[in-house]
Length: 283
Ligand code: AMP
Ligand code: FE
Ligand code: FE
Ligand code: ZN
Image (tube, rainbow, N blue to C red):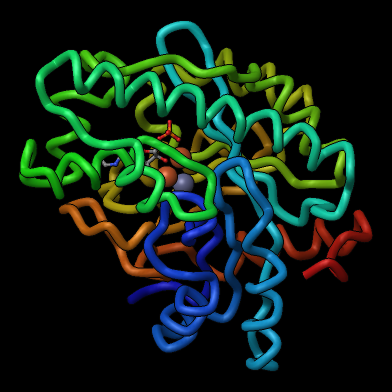
C-alpha cells in the first residue's frame, strides 16, 4: 500500500469484480482518500460510487471513464477525469460503443467454438452482468469451462490482439477520444503507455488536442520505467499520474487500490487544474 490516491480503477459496471461500493470500501480501508472510478466506456457505476463515497467525508471520488482507441498495430487507452457524466450526447456515444462491444464479444465467442473451446454466451453475459462486456468476461468463462487455467492464460492463448479469437470492434482514434472527453470538460490522461513503444509522435498530437496527463505510476511498472515515463511526461507538459487499474481478477500484475507509488504532488496538480477549469465540484 503506497499512495493516498488511485486514479484508475474498474468495477462490475465494466470488467472489474467488485461493485463500486465494495471497491471504495476496499480503497478507503487501504488508505486511499482520492479515487477515480474509470470503467470502460461507461459511467453507469458513478451514481452508486458517489453514494458510497458520501459515507466518508475525507474521501474524494473523481468521476472518470476509460475509453479504448486504435492506432495502427496497437491499442491506446485514454482516461477522462472529472467528466460531465450527465451529458446526454456523451451518453449516446457511450451507448454506441457498448453496443459494438456486445457484437464483438459474440463474434469472439463464435471464434472460440470454431477453435474447439466453446463457452456459452449466457456464461459470458452472466460474468458481464449489466456492465459493459469485455474480453475479461470471455476469459472468465474460458477459465470456468476448464479451457485455460487463468484469465492471463486466456489472453495469452486466445484473446490478445494477435490471438486467434481476437475480433476488432468499432473504435475511435486517440485524437477523437481526447476531443470527446474535452467536450464534456474531462481531463484526458494517456493510460498505461509502456506498451506503446515510441510515444513522442503520439504525445505531440494528443498534447495539441488537449491531453493533460500521462500514467507514469502504474501497476507493476519498475522504478526505472517510472522514471523514464516521468521525464517524458514533464517534457510534454503532462501531469505524471497513475493508478492500480484494479480489476480484482488476480494475476501477477495486479496491485491493490492505492498500491502504486503515485506521489501527492501530481494529484494536487490534477485537482488544482480541475479547480481552475471549474469542474472540481463534480467530485
Ligand atoms: P476489451 O475492453 O474487451 O478490449 O478488453 C481489454 C481489457 O482486457 C483490459 O482493459 C484489461 O482489463 C484486460 N486485459 C488485457 N490484456 C490482458 C491480459 N494479458 N491479461 C489479463 N487481462 C487483460
Ligand atoms: Fe479492463
Ligand atoms: Fe486500459
Ligand atoms: Zn483500466
